[in-house]
Length: 480
Image 1 (cartoon, one colour):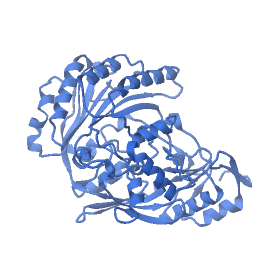
Image 2 (image 1 turned 30 degrees about the horizontal axis):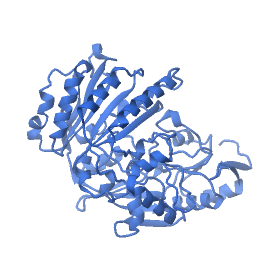
Image 3 (image 1 turned 45 degrees about the horizontal axis):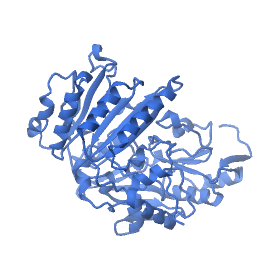
Image 4 (image 1 turned 90 degrees about the vertical axis):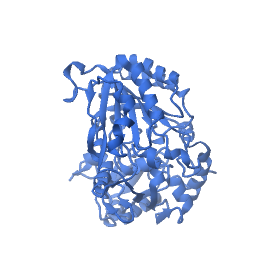
């Protein structure tokens, strides 16, 4: 046990430090089934660890709640003392919103249960779950819901920001498949929200991020998917980029909704499946997931087959859970990540040639440029169907910078990402994915993410969190 002072200094809502006595903290701990941690306690290091090393910071206190009742006790406590509160689901947000610097962090890792109701096609999911937890549980029944495409990402953060993945083309944004939540709001109440109960709160939660409370249970609609699908990685030399990019355009324009393909321009990793002579060389890769009738996959992928001669080809029939983890190794914990992304309505030849030109001169050897194929079911709903909006999106495009801590050229790498992003913005819809926003992005960038839904979100914030207790996020200020 670490040595304790009589007074713990904790960051307040307005940036001041609030002194909490031992008696006050003991009183909070006595109300909890889960532990209250301070620096030096067993489990502290893992509780404060986040994926993006660039935004790593430390809270003063961590609570690992075991129930919604624990969460309510913490919310009441921080509200009474006007303390800064962060919520960590998976800790994978690029902007580092999980940790409240010198404040209180709710680490939801003890609330990681998944309950599948096969007949009802529903899954109840704890807020500490990673994508892999849900996929494993639902795939045991040949079912899945729309989640992301890196298995270690937290379900809570991904969903509350809208959420997309390989199944988005078939079933919409992740929040289009959200049926109900249990949530602790700023007044400490445990509520249920759905389309019929607390409907405006539910609307705001479907894309509005962590601005409205702490979700303690998600209920998702499930769909028949897998357990065997067709997918994996395939790559060609970057020297063939113009040809590969045109094939990608042809493929995605004519693709059935059961097919989603991510295009990634990168340097080939020193992985066992990459021939040694290609290690570190620029390549054009595609990550493929086809969840339709496997007998027809050759016809579906004909534009790729026509390219021939890949340098890497891992396409095959395989479990859906494997496809969902294929890109995990491209995002190891602890690197510094600096991304700039935009939503795109169409793939123009000018956009594709710009992507090729930009990647050819990236100075950061670990940088990537990606295009994600999303159009389909999400485009068929009204813009006001959930706060997520962005119903005109058909692709997402991003410049992904990453480097080791203490990289001497980090400033130059950041500038190159920013410069590339400025070129790509002209092709964008004007919207963006709130979960990919950086720590330094201002409120204007958040407003752009929601477009016409932003003012309605501000009114919802005023109704459910008028004091802006939940502000360690991509913050939406309450309407005055």
